[in-house]
Image (cartoon, rainbow, N blue to C red):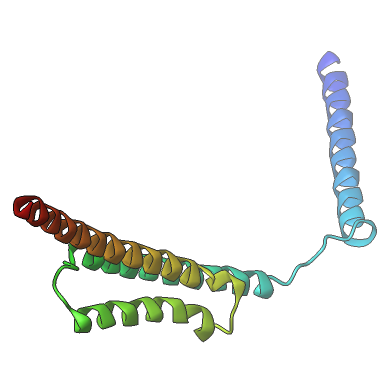
Length: 151
């Protein structure tokens, strides 16, 4: 008898648990479908923006390597020797770095081209001025020694 009562109580509890879980599941489905709307977003704009930023980053790395190469050329260049063609080539390369801003319709994301070109131009000009200053200093010292020798 105890077994029959036990099994009857047990099956009542199982029925209650099943009914309770079924009602919870139905309430959840009703709430998510009709009451609480889950927003659906269109990700195409976001993906397009991410692709644009990736393209910009690729261009930045490409131009960074170009700037490094131009910097090395300026660093190894001897300004004591009159090298008009070499100077023109370097100025042309600097202009090409600057033109990335204009090629992309003056988009502020490509302003790195102008900034790096300005820095390269300043570096080029200061190296040239420094070289000419050292050359002039040497000429003045030679003239001073010659004047001292004549006195």
